[in-house]
Structures are given as structure tokens and as C-alpha cells.
Image 1 (cartoon, rainbow, N blue to C red):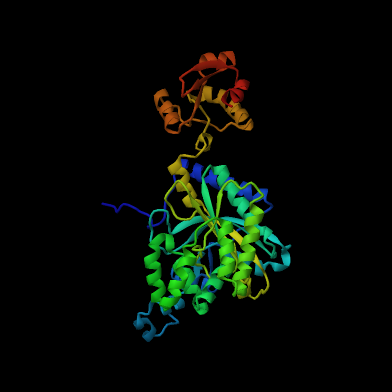
Image 2 (tube, helix red, strand yellow; image 1 turned 30 degrees about the horizontal axis):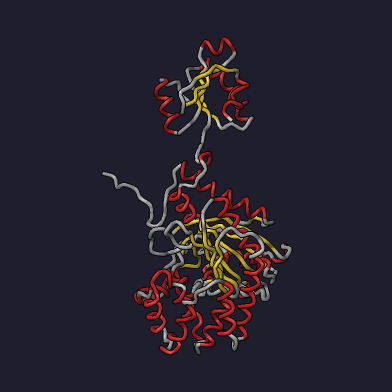
Length: 453
């Protein structure tokens, strides 16, 4: 008996209805990107590992999918290397390429390679899949799409303001209530300085970024395991648990971080973004959240994360400022800021909240019944005409029993069926049936498009 085929864990097939929903997501986000002046690019699914490694921190590097070199990848290895069973070293020998982990690092590589062709500031967007060797769970997949928008070549904080506006616009169009959380890596650096652990900034940010997932006690345990002193951990508690309005948090931080130049710069940037947004009628909730750290090492300024308010799921969008990312590719001084929409999680949220517009999942609008060659010859010119008018239409390909053709229409949720038999042909007309109401009417072919619309 043949083994039943399957797909790798953390990946999914999508049916035609599911693809219609996904395309609604991509089209909505793409429309907003264009609305704000962004241009689309694409980069390869695989990159050189030298491009990807070291850009996401130690934890991120472990989640890179590596691709075996073609040909005899054993030939350059000694017997001792093969017998060592050192997975990391062997992977470095076997693999020169990897699947992209996100769209930001490939974009930075793109900017450096094409710098002479671009006009700055350069506003680009990408809608492509990425891959992470993560443990699959609800809302977390090994293959998923990201929808990224970035601006490079500008230090202006108006870019951050505009990205928040874009987030608000996208989720308003979807009808999803969200909280947009904002922080600044400079504030986090200032906090690390004032608690006396400036050299542990990465360990601190990686740990407190998990607060929502693992709780305060486990965060503190992780901080202690990373060598953060108990005194520093105690100083950290009131800061990461700071409550109140955004304005109250800013005022408190000004007092707490008064001795940190970097921290005060982060407060100044955050205050500008929040104050500017306050006059722009943003529909979403905006919160200054000091526990927001985002574990990726390349963020240097403002950071964003978006949470759905009515569904229990991880962040559905995020991003931030990365002043020094292109520097690792030999292009210093190129500032950038961007956001990424998690299309797969947005898909799950829209499904759970049943927020898809009805017309989104409708495919074919009109099915022509096939009674035989004579009827087909009559129908084909009509079919061409209704398609030219924008109606999604098809002719059943076989001269099958009426019941079978009607079952096909029901299975595809086709709302209208057109029937042309001997009587209709003689009169130059067509019978149109509404599959929802069962109502039938005999009309002229030129009326079909208007009736369906």
C-alpha cells in the first residue's frame, strides 16, 4: 500500500477559498503601501549564508534553514571532520546558502548592491515568503509570508509616524481592533546603563521581550542565568512594570534616565512620535510599552509591535529603526526604518473574527450550462462578452446531466447559472437562474452583466 503523502510540519496547503482570502489580505496591504508612495521589489528565496548569519542574534542564527551544496559536498572534508559529528562545523562546510529568515536583511543587501541605481530616501515594499526552523505551534509556522515596508536613506522621525499611520490604515481596512505598542532601543540601553549592566543590553532585551509569553518570574530567572546581578534585577522591576498614560510614562522616564544621554535621546524620539500621532486621528490604541524589546539585534531606535485585541495570538505586525544594518555589507551611514505585517497571523485573526467581506471569497459569478455542441456555439460569444464586461464566468466543459452541472455550481458557490436550450436559442435569449433564491428569468444576453452586478 502506497504511503500517504504529507507536507513538512509548520507548512500548509491552501484551498481556492483560502487563497481568495489570502489574496484579499495581500491586495489590501499592497494598496496601502502604494497609497503611501512605496515601490515593490523582490529578492531570491535563498541567500548566501554569509549574508544571513550574524544578523539576527544567536537565537536567530539557530533558526536559519540551511541548503546543502549541490554535488559531492563530502569531498572537501577530512575523515576526522566527518567523524567529529560536530553539526555546526559540518553545516558550515556543507552549506553555502540558506532560505531567507526575513525580508529586511535581504533588502539591506539589495540596497548595497543597487545603491547606484536608487534614489534616496528609497521607499520599498516586499510581499514574499520567509522560512524559520522554529517549533510549529498555533500562529507560528516554519513557512510564512511577510509584507514589509521600509524607508532607507532618511533619519527623519516622520518616517516612524508614517509607518504607524500605515499600520492603523491597514487594520482599519480589515476591521481588526489592535494595540500598537511602541518603544525605543535607546531607552532600553539607558535602562541597562542606570542599573549598572550596560554590557548586558542584548541579554536584558532578549529576556524582557518574553515577558508576555513566560511571565515576570521566568524573565527574572533568565536574567539571573545570564549573569545579571540581583541588585540590577531589582532595579529593573519598577521600570518594566511602569503603568499610566503614555505622557505619564514619558515624564517618569525623564526622571529615571536623567543621567543617561542615550536613554534621554530615546525618550525625546518617543515623545516626538507620540505627540505627532496624537494630532492625526489614529483609530488604533497606541501604547508606550517598556517591555517591548524585539529580540533582533539590528534595531537601534524606535521599535513597534501590533497585537490584536479580540484574538489570543502573537504579534501580527512589528518593526523598527535600524541605523547600522547596511554597514555590515560595507555601506556605512545608511539609516532605515520599516515594518512587517504577518500575513499568516492576520489570516487566522480574520478567520476567527469572520471579517472577510462576502465578495472576497466568491470565485466564479456565472456558470453556463452545457447541453451540447449547438448550445455551446451559441454560448461562447456570450461568454466572451460577459467576461469583457468584468463578470467572472465559465462554461461547464462537458455535456453532462443537469443535476451534475448544478451540483458543480453549488460546490463552487456560484451565485448564477445561465441556461440556453432550443427555445432560448430560437428567441435569441438566455435563462438566468439565481442559485440562492431559485428565481429564474428569461433575458437578452446583453442584460446578463447588469443582472449579475
